[in-house]
Length: 118
Image (tube, rainbow, N blue to C red; front, top):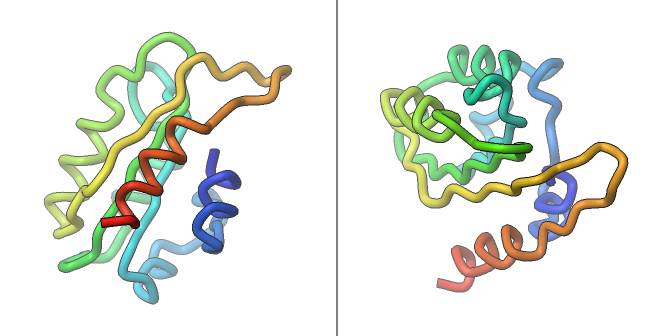
């Protein structure tokens, strides 16, 4: 899903497991995604968000992929990011992801497009 969003917006992607959180300092918009693990964000995503610098004035789009239920993923990310000053402007998710089948992200990408058409 990250690659599909990156292609749509012509924006770079960063691997959260190997990138320093300071990478966001050069951008006004953060698009942050995670698979859902145990009804929460992946450990790598949670650790990255924990180490993020303050983001006063930065807008954020959250996305997740999940098999059954997204649980508290968006709530956990929203609470932490909001406490650091990031403004959540959109949350999109894709249910039913299977590693052996191509995914259709059309609906999520359409929601993201709408944000940029305003």
